[in-house]
Amino acid sequence: SFELTQPPSVSVSPGQTASITCSGNKLGNTYAAWYQQRPGQSPVVVIYQDTKRPSGIPERFSGSNSGNTATLTISGTQAMDEADYYCQAWDSNTAVFGGGTKLTV
Amino acid sequence: EVQLVESGGGLVQPGGSLRVSCAASGFMFSSYELNWVRQAPGKGLEWVSHIRTDGTTKYYADSVKGRFTISRDNAKNSLYLQMNSLRAEDTAVYYCARGSLAAGGRAFDYWGQGTLVTVSS
Image 1 (cartoon, rainbow over the protein chains, first blue to last red):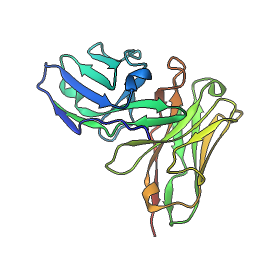
Image 2 (image 1 turned 90 degrees about the vertical axis):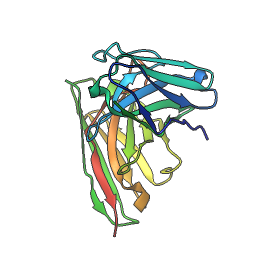
Image 3 (image 1 turned 180 degrees about the vertical axis):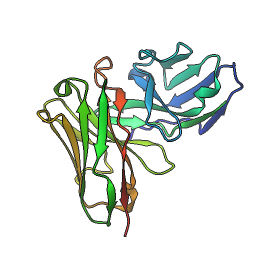
């Protein structure tokens, strides 16, 4: 079955760039999305179709997807970006989420 | 304003049944694909089920196939998840999530606040 693998945790200093990876077999052949979930809140999409930002999402959030790896990059990371991040993609008619990455700022 | 409001969660015994609902407002409900996504306490997100706009096409995660049934009532702007033969591992917050039109339904652009289902004796 299709699986997406994320590092359990990533740490970054305020103002620096954080990169969170998501690995899956031939992931680059499908679209990836990324979700931010703060404690006690529902997830929010921050990137869809690999690189697109929904309205209201800061420009410091960007994404890429190629080969077997999708990457979420947060430039100039702020304290408010501390949260869990999940990648997500579809394998045929099944949606799959990565295990999640806790970003510590 | 888009709103998704889940209800119907609660405590149920193993082997029991429960139906959770999601009431939608603020958008043309019948034009959007919808999903259920769950999150066990302290764990990650797990996709559960998907339903197309007219309700005729449905998909399920292997973990719930044959036990859960997704449905929708476009006249009532409501999404449902009927859960049968519940197990302890089904304990989770259940979210309804809207498929994004911009993403061809393949990303989830709005989520409800979730409803907690606890399976325990």
